[in-house]
Image 1 (spheres, one colour):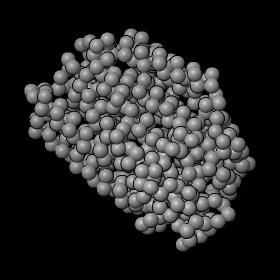
Image 2: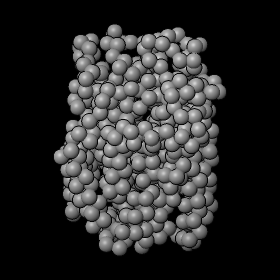
Image 3: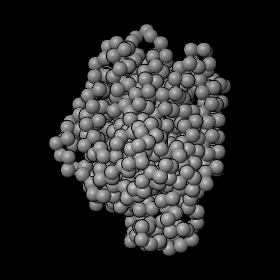
Image 4: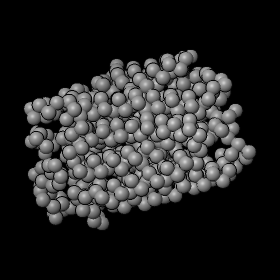
Length: 491
């Protein structure tokens, strides 16, 4: 994983920050350079609409092209370490939802919204700063230290649970401790997000960028499926939730090992990012440097609309999973809520995995700006159907298909933004995406948790689905809002 960001460059000359590198370093990976001589399409466009797959790539078939990024060592190490770590994270997320419900079942919807909201608020307020940091420091070292802190917090949660400090006997103290640990973790996650997202384009050549991002989404969705499934199995055999927190703590060791093992293609040195930004004409004042991502999104309206679409997707669409325990408790009164929650959550992750793999194999000739509104509308209709589901099989079908539509939409948006943004601005623009994707999530939890408590969780999900469907319909009627010119995503 690269420890520093690549300087701005074009195909004709190198900037000062690249003086120590071979001229073609930015597009020639060190390992498995070009399997089977697949074409050299390094000028990726935002939507990849104008990139025609080479005959060699077409001959390799769907499977080979879908998993082509695994031919690159650094990407494979990053993907594997992140998979193990994210499985642990989603195990803890599932365990926390069950824990909050156990502490105070009657207020599960409200408490879940508040706890998740506090954990995600730092992303909303710190993302812009975190993006600027990701563009200026050694990303690998930053990420390693963040993993160490998150490891300690997960272990602390396990100790508090095993010592009975977290229990229904003292709900106020328990919820306060869970919220505090979540808030502290959220601060470090806020700095982790832009750094993780902005390094992905440095792990594969540009022609494989969309495939690499889609496979990374598949990795995340695999963990979403595996994590809750493992927790469900542990509950069935009588394991305590404390063990889940310890497993999550250990999982961070894998991503730390991957970060340390990756051989960077660009050596980080102080001032590297500043040189690139200066050569690209980026404003030099501290405030303008900090807000350069906002300026870019404002001047490139299609990128701004994509970020706004992500905010709509999360705020109005994700509550169906945020208050899932409350929905199950109301719809299946007297049932084992923890078991049903794990089952539904697992099928949602399974659908998301299928969607992510499908996007990874999407032909380069497909127009992304036309697919995004369609998958967004499909997702909205599915969560509306979910809100009316009265049986477990119908709920499972709706949540599985919704998971596929959700990750398809978010992956398409992410790949489009990643491909559009110049390398020297990548951290700051992706910080805006993280604000919309993760920072808006706590606002959604804070809003829909109490709303679900007041009007019922199903009605709250229905309201969100209707608003999201209206936005998707507007995008379908205004395709020019998502029309982009060829990317200028240098270095």
